[in-house]
Length: 110
Image (cartoon, rainbow, N blue to C red):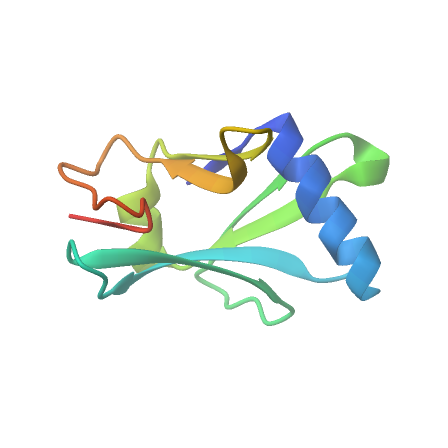
């Protein structure tokens, strides 16, 4: 299962609040495609399947729920989702120890 850093959990909560969708969860998935074979996909989802893996990150009042389908969970085991807001980097980034190769854009891996 993927782990969220504190800064990623805070940003996800901000996005949920701005959308007025506090009851949704962040779904993180791996899909075939991209220039290296697989690509990451993240979106807010209200449909949780019985076999989805679930975890909660952040402080109680600001906690966010993350859901991952079983196939993606295998490829995201030990991965971390971080959020940076700085001059040299801005946005979400996934660090995945299962990736043997990544592309230049950082959005796909193999």
